[in-house]
Length: 133
Ligand SMILES: [Cu+2]
Image (cartoon, rainbow, N blue to C red; front, side, top):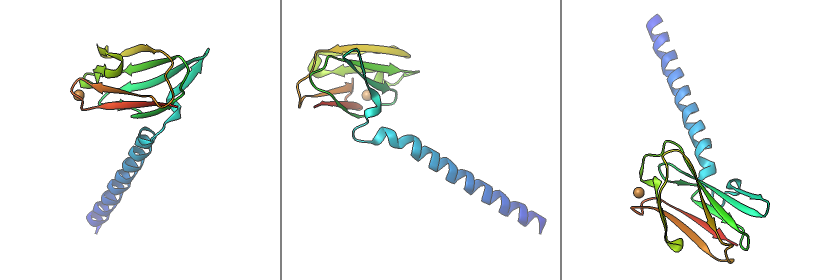
């Protein structure tokens, strides 16, 4: 009798924990999956700053940015030892190894509306896109 009670309560505890972990993962992931995440844009003294995190890929993958504004891409790395640290932006002729941890600033001239900028890891496995409008 006692053992059965213990087993049942352990099973209930484990399934509750599992549900809690699943829920917290989903809420942590969803901001990165939105098509246009405005949370990574800021405008400082007329300079548009787009922040992209590089680690196991790039996030956010899609950014809707403003056209006609001088822009800086700020790429953050934090213990990034995967290939997303080998960044290429073909349209800029940019190719660089990002530091394992730190900020890399890439200045862009103001972009025309309708322009989209794509960044890729060296192997083309991970990518991000910034659309200017
Ligand atoms: Cu890669």
